[in-house]
Image (tube, rainbow, N blue to C red; front, side, top):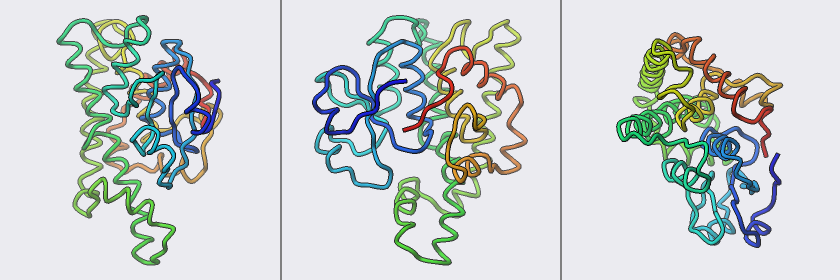
Length: 261
């Protein structure tokens, strides 16, 4: 397990420093942790407190959100696609970006369906906001403001949250089809015949529909219940093979049990 340090200590260090939010297995953060583990890149984890403005972090890197990665004196990296490119240039092997341009384009396109706007995680988060927004409407309380602000960032609306399960199911269907195609070709992976960043992103992002068991990924009960509370539309689209592939990638390549900040 990598060392956990404060922002103040991280500013004094060199090497790779990964800023993560405390207390939750956020899929964006878990994906970069997974790739660093696969590449055997040493790094320290930097604690970011959820629901705060983090003026110290903002003054240091110019970015308020986690995850973000700072390597030596390079500018902080925050975008998921930039993080993938960083990992592959920082350590050559094993390569997580395909050399073949068609496979490379396909990989980034499929990860976009998981990690980018209107992807799986975006729409699952819209669903997670709904019970909190409903409570905030009935009982206005400043304690809800952090979630309300995040929901505004995701352009939360009744129309958006009604559409979200169908969009999430669409992405799950896409990955089911891809996994079946790969198995037919004799591959254990989502792309080609070797591990790629796509497998790591799939394994970590599935937590928003089907979390790892408590012994493999301890997390607060309320969060586990929220992650596992999926609409029937999403549940019907969650093919068992998708969970099996997640489990295979974690047990074969990623760090278990998952350790949160």
